[in-house]
Image 1 (tube, rainbow, N blue to C red):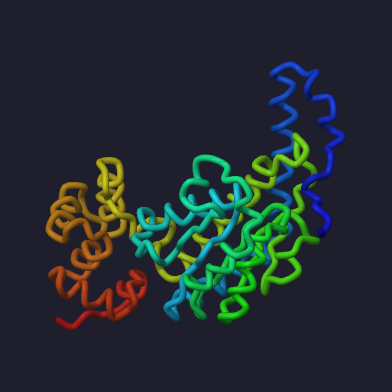
Image 2: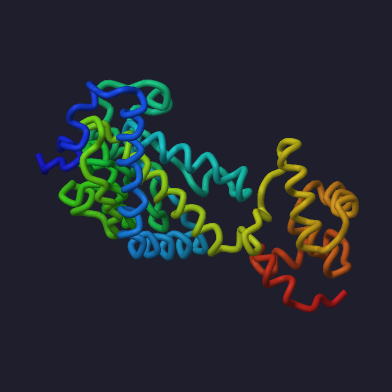
Length: 297
């Protein structure tokens, strides 16, 4: 088996079981401080993956996360946040975990060692997809099956790992390896490794969505207002961008069935909602492009 750097023993926390509660959490906090710096070291590789993902999105491809244990749960979490945040189709970003849905709540014995289950991913993966393999150690047989399936289909692969000597780091097209060092508790990769993976996945989806026009400035213009808090946010976004009152923004949002971009275009360009929708469609939903253009009515 390839070396597993994430199993190393941390000498700085060797006597953690003799510490007070405050001392324990200080040790954990001090180790966590290293994570952002480790992620900073791989920003060029993260940006490379973002360019690939956003390009494939525009070609009709998808972002597919695969992982086992903590890594798999983080992938499913990040994927599940995309539809409410960016109004994406739930199929655009998907998360798959070794052991299936049950593994989201409890450990499924032997799931990460199941090569065949990973290879069966070939039933899901398409050529234009970007397959992101998430693993601290980079060695689960489940992911070996996934990467074999990806290569067979011709899909691009990205490794998100903390072990440069792991299998996925050796075989993926793009490698994002945040070297966070030994964990507070030896081998507990839900700690620094998990935090690093969460930070990286945040960047992959957020930056890719920005690149394809899912934001205007730093505002979430494609969010789905599914509760009172989000409805209030939608109203404030429309009011801010269209430079109208809160009540006017609410009035137009109600008329457009809470379509934020349609409401903004309708107000700014003084057109009805159907023309606003047509203009957005013409420019691929990119609000900044629509607002720059003169609309002939």
